[in-house]
Image 1 (cartoon, rainbow, N blue to C red):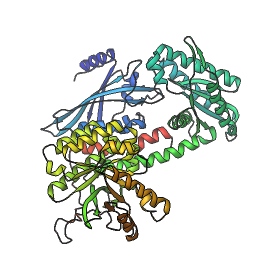
Image 2 (tube, rainbow, N blue to C red):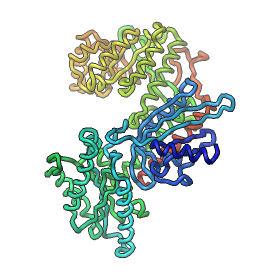
Image 3 (tube, one colour):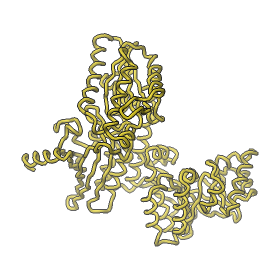
Image 4 (spheres, rainbow, N blue to C red):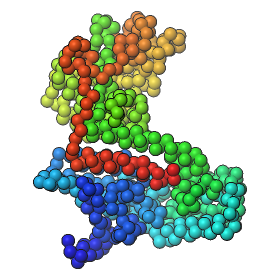
Length: 595
């Protein structure tokens, strides 16, 4: 492209409030065009030139959604699949924007090169991100004044330290005060009224602080307060005073009194090694206050511990995503015994991960991180696919597969399952889908619809962890599942009179609506005998077999009993993208934690 055409394209994009990019995935390089300073706060020469640098600007809370959308597009069988997503991005000057990104995956079949062609657009005023965040700023805000306020506060902090406080171990702290649910006000009342709320909040803070501190607007709906001549130990008390002020007295606006809440984060100057990080550190603590339920105060000490925990979660997620792309997920199978025939009736399929060294990792070491980051649908998809493959290979086999609430409420998961089983009734009849009791409690009508759909395909449905959430008799009757699995916490202490009575009650409840029961977690023959004597139909637990990554229904000498741990390393371009992208997760986290 000639320089003239490039300038013409950039001008046209700027006039239409767009930024365009081309991402060459093979060498991980970006080319940009459009209003780069307006979007990223950077001149063209300073714009991120690779994926890692761009990802540093994206809010890590939006990582799971963005990552899954990108991977879905890269994995698509379409020739040139497209994608669309919305996320929060922090400009180089610290201002948060809600960005809408659209793009197309371009596969060159001759060179086997993959490129992503995309556009960035700032969401229009009054709209809400698809990945909501309480500190979303109305795009109608005066970005120039916000940027200036942030820079001014930063300069005042540094200047005061240079001039007055060479030993900063005794005095000074910074609070970040964010208005709660600002996006809701913006949606319902419009940007003009939202701007008035923001201005009135600033006025209230200045009245509270008076001459003791400096108040500056540092983001769309966030104020920074610098207390220079103040001991560190008063920070929490001052924050509580601010919280109480907003709780007890509404703001007076042109539309009348309006009650708002604020979330506050704070950092003392002695905690800050690099003074350019002081405002982001206070904001990180404020964001944790919002996560904890809003209208509360969190110090940087507490937030930094949370950040460390988040880094561990992201590391687990990174390991899991790599395992998917390098074929390092396996199923472990645990037998479930029929108490009437004393024969194995079916096996539960449990996901396992093989790490880079070939070590088997149990689900408990990575599933909590996957669930917290919203990636459990990847687990469910792979577990289901592998289970259906096993059922196709062994016509006498019956398997159960777990599904998370996230997948259960995802229409794509259900459509995929229907497509897999619609023309394979012999497989559907040998498949049991395990749903959680919390799914019934949270949305009984939707769960009932899904159960019926699965049963119409020929599959059976089991209610897992029965008793943990106290499903009502009427709900169990209406749901019409095929089995209930009594929660293992009651089985493992069944020798206690209370638990034994509770198990017998659950058994009687299920029997009353003609639903079979599974006693899950039996570890001894004594526990198994008690369950059998009480009429429980099936027993699962170590007493009859541990979960094993091998086809335990086959004879030990059978050539197909062992499941290979060798991985099928793929060479597709999008696998390389995943390695680079997921490897950046910790970088994103560090850019917002100061760790």
